[in-house]
Image (cartoon, rainbow, N blue to C red):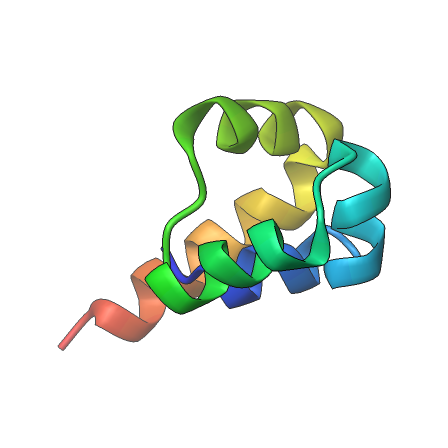
Length: 65
């Protein structure tokens, strides 16, 4: 899944920094590597299940032929 889209679904970089207590640099590493660690994904899904479910569904629809 696209790290940038996940971060936006969670409210943007600033909000993710507030939620996680992580630095701007760490969030930027997630974006540049297009990877959010699994424990954070579990937490994000618990915090905002509807937004991430919608993102999952839109990603699946865009991958269909």
